[in-house]
Length: 194
Image (tube, rainbow, N blue to C red; front, side, top):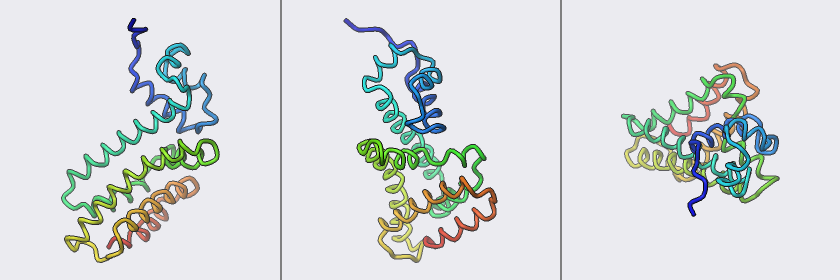
């Protein structure tokens, strides 16, 4: 017996749930909030998300990461100068909307919140963020090999530094409204890849 067919777009439903998780956090997002946003009933929810809210959250992190990395890699592949692209990527964070600044980084938020709730989900979110770190590392290695940057520090450490810079920017954006100050902070942080 095949079971009940899906009568909704699962990817779209997960995206809608992501907006709730991102705005409220995991703990404050009730199942009722999620169902209302997704436009599905409890039966469909538990049929397709056997582990309930936890599974939905994990799948939202996965989908978010896949889509964010696709956008990053698509833009990177079209860049003539990968280091210039990386700097522009960071500088663009200063141009985030007020809503984006208040929401912060979805994966970063998950890592922080899950640290005290679910170490496995924390580790999963951290592993997803590692994909961006690996992309940074690849850019840095290529730039070092072609003498595009002077810094010869291990590309792995420089990539970790950039992830730390990015995470710090997302925290600072929540309290700093002056875009010029934020740009100056980012520019200072990026001097490491000159």
